[in-house]
Length: 362
Image 1 (tube, rainbow, N blue to C red):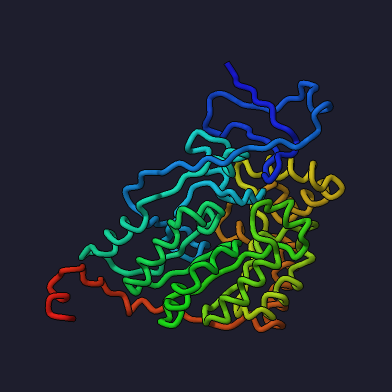
Image 2: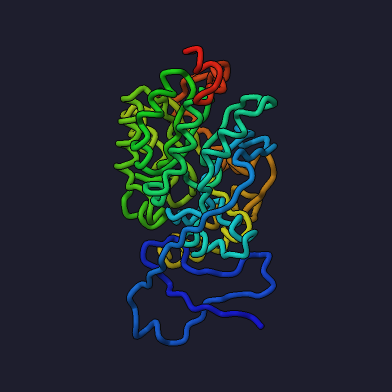
């Protein structure tokens, strides 16, 4: 028997407008109008739950040729930022949860991440390789303020002199500026700040619980001021919605001290395409049809094409124009600096308290 759940069109502080079942569920959940919404127009609220996850290992590996890293650490599953376009949403379906509202309200964290990482790095067989923090969901989402999982991971990496990078759209990263500055001084780290729009209204609509655009620009300024290399990520670039802001975002980031830039065209795999279209119809009905038409022009007539090599940037004249604009703006604002590889040669396993080296004062 199918299960039905009613959801209001707008849920206060959330990005998704529904909570449909994931693609692996045998029973479907659908929203339906029972007439009460006309009498109760106030947007609903959903509380966030956070559940500890027992992980056996903390470093994940991938062989995707267009990702840019093979090793990563994700302290959290799900993300309270609620970004409607988030490519990580479909992963919640593997847990029997919805990629919609469940993704941004039913969160999981890895409480023993730091201990697991220290154990992995201490193995005699371990070979250091650059680690990316936050390749799936944001490592500095609101719950990190109290859980401090990400900080624990970075503390271990700095202590082991291990190279790493971090990507976020949260100003909370500034809490860990002491560790990041220390790592940057050793040539071990760089940070990517995602800025999708300078328009507060659009940003609030797309990313309801992420930092405001100005907070993110300020994070770029303070990170670079402390010597931490920062790249700005204009991701996703959505034709007909925020693509016109590309040059303005890159310019503001460069003025704040960023020295690199990247972009990714909107990706709509699996359940995201329906969630995104639903959000467009409720939040931006005047642009919905045009935006989806432009997206399909970049994806061979489909909502999404997962083909390697084109999934990040799209194909066709519109995608080519987007790439040309980005290349020109990147050069114009000095965001095309070649940073080179992070230093993997400083890695060392620190002596344990009471170990032999400690006894001899080493």
